[in-house]
Image 1: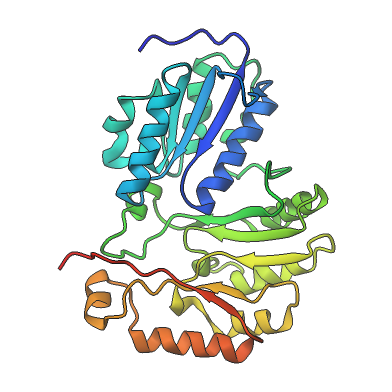
Image 2 (image 1 turned 90 degrees about the horizontal axis):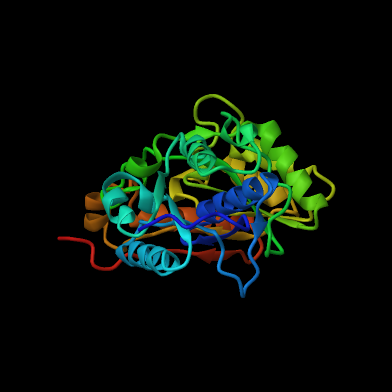
Length: 302
């Protein structure tokens, strides 16, 4: 496909998938705006469409590639995220002018590709080792804050470790600074998210419970919410923070995935149905009428 001329420096970011993808799409939007580009109005055909895509399920991958193909009829298309990584990259090339795979270096690769297309000005901080701080979460009342990326849990069905690499934490000070900035920008609720947030601090730094204490001390943050937790990550220290922190909403998402211990072993989930039930009982004992949500997978092979 011939590359269209970039005449108006307008863009749109189409995002599919999880809260981590939603957060990274906001990073891309902010970076492009900082470089002098303008978010296209609903009636405009933008010069550039960034499809920050998902490949966790076959349906998510199908929707991601469909979005890219439709956008390629009128705009230059860049596919980023999980559907641009690993075995999916050749598929992405069928609809996109360029691809930027998820992983440790995705911001640097995105910046290099956009500079190749002639950004109006530079934005070096976007490609630095530290995550750039978001100043607002466009189009949302609550704001997501990514505190870590990557996973090495090794669940049998999950491709995320292959696409996003090993676990790596953001520094506590950067997370606190970003949460404060977003709250002051008008987002009273902060959703703490990541690929496996319960493993935050596993390498010796402050853990998730300690991070939440720091976030709760930010006066402008009115509410805190956690994204998904592995049942084994519901520690006594975390429950105590939940119990003693009114800002931390009594909602926990604990993926079960299967009610069969034999299937859980084949999934390599690292817990039994009895372990999951104990985690739920501990949460109910610690909190007053908590909201507990879960995932259950159907059609697991075997």
